[in-house]
Image (cartoon, rainbow, N blue to C red; front, side, top):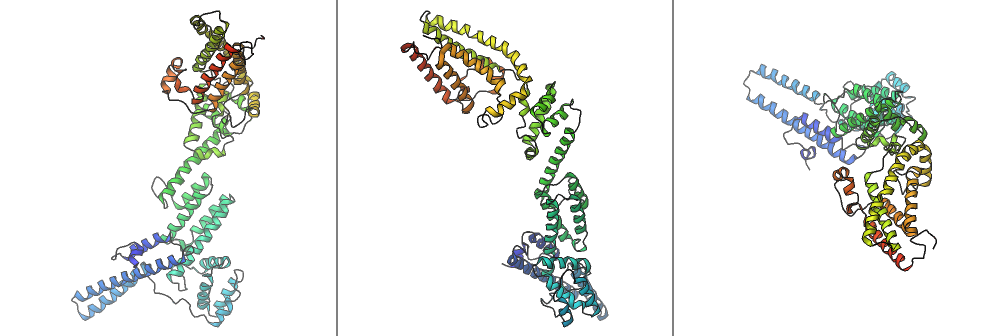
Length: 541
């Protein structure tokens, strides 16, 4: 594979394009992660720069051959071209290859023995006094290229005091050495910032980030881009406050409006989405600390964000109205569908727990089903007595079936407000008596729903005995536990005409469709062949 293929460039690419492509590929081929791949990439980079430089020299030579000038002017032009090429080389950072192992004199070698970060300043002063500073610095470079945490600390000192990796450095470095040192330093900076973020020391993080960003060696364009990419990754992978993010954006002059942001774009967009989430959470926290709970949005924030007991929740919602419930529903919907990550920070995972405090009226479908069940049980009871014809029994049962319905409506209108007053005790009982696997959302309450169900169960026992109670109880449990239905029904139609769609077959589960006919058959069989056995009546025979 030639250098152009490896760099993903055409063969006539200029030096600027070569440097850009190399910086882009370097992000995915780091020396510490893939040393062999990095060496191939670096060799291709240097080869491509050499070819680009030769092409530039050949063009300059062709221009000189085609010029007609006097010998003096030709000499001047040659010197001008030479100076121009030298300036281009400096601009494009084209440096000749340096020897891998420079000669280090004996004095510098002795100073390098036992070198540590603690004695490094003293050894450097001694090298200057012995006039071997250049040799000492060359040996120090080789020393820093070794993989060690102590050597990384020495590299940091050299970058700060000897201006390494800048145009003002005195030691000669090959491009590979510069990239290796830069990668080592960036990794060290990243680890330091990671530790500060993990410790939630945000002020120290900003100070360290500012100090690193202001380093002269990081002012070069490609290195600065790589550094910003590292900071973006840190923000993506760690928790932070809005104040920290604002300070980082101000430091780098990042702005979503102006389009100035680091790469990759998808990570930046994810960061901005997270910023909106944190800003939303901060606003809700401020609302939850506000004392004006008469405002619907403030009441909703108090209810969902502040940890409270059931009694405190009931006290907060006392006197609430339609606007309050709408605000709670809107906040719960936003948290559920737009910012689900915030749910882990809330005191309750069920964001709709407040619905249990509503004075929810009994659905119209429930009254129709109660009428149907009562009429069926009453009709079987009349047929069992053998005093009435089947037609009269059916008509009478259908009419009398409405009596328990009207009585139930009257009683429930009084029971619902009463049950709401003892909601705290009801919740306490429900959490301990109802298994979580049967009611994972906490929808059902022992007092609010259990007592009316016991009354209905007793009524069916009075009409059809033990089998009647078993039939009603089985139908209720199958409706709660079996979620599959025989069909579907339009929700708008069901809401608009509840009386017409209450007994529609689409509401039934397959098990209910089997269980009810089976229990009816058993009940009729017992009425015909075992009339004295206490299965279809609670009256003593």
